[in-house]
Image 1 (tube, rainbow, N blue to C red):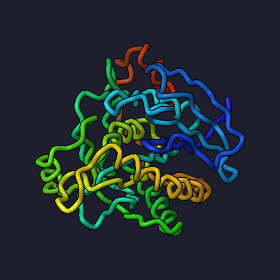
Image 2: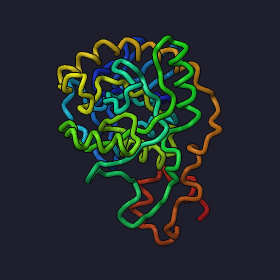
Image 3: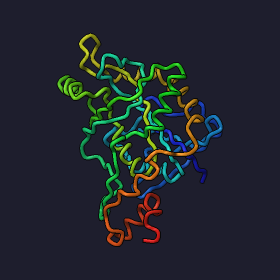
Length: 289
């Protein structure tokens, strides 16, 4: 099976890569079930890329039902070392307007009951999430996006809500009081699982609305979100096309060795079936133990 070192997670509005050539569809099975859809392998500016529509073609899967572990594991199994995630968000700040792009550097996780770790059932690992988005990949995304002529905000806190319902006004005001900049439904557990899989993860968050706190703007609706996404999808396609060849070949961030000092369970106590299940992630730390 062909491999790709760069993965694209397409969110609402981004269901295909227009700039991809030589595309082939592959089905990938994982110990955590099937990913959201088949993965599309192809070339973007001469670089091999794996594209996965997060919600499935036709937008069939709700945020809380996403098979996030299967999605990240499937990309890892194809050789992916960096993930560029695209997703729709609402703005919680006056200065972040609809149609802007945000490359966040922090998030607050308010989700409930999602599978947010590969390390369960007899094995424990505690990866650092102090910087939940890869700083190197995020910086490159910001620089390329700005150079592409988009209005891009570097840094910001992403409030991850459970959904699929949108916020109440009281919730929106609370999140603004906490200092959050944007609000969406998918950055977690993706960023956590990518870190456990030692994959760099950065996000291009597409601002579609002012959530519901801004009294001078109409209340957010699904039609508004999808309408604004249609207007910005060509911008994000252009950013991705320019970003992929600009990504450094070598990884000098901590993402690549996130598990090195994170495994808490004694190697001899880890169940054999768990070692087999997570061989792709932990194999290099188990050998010789």
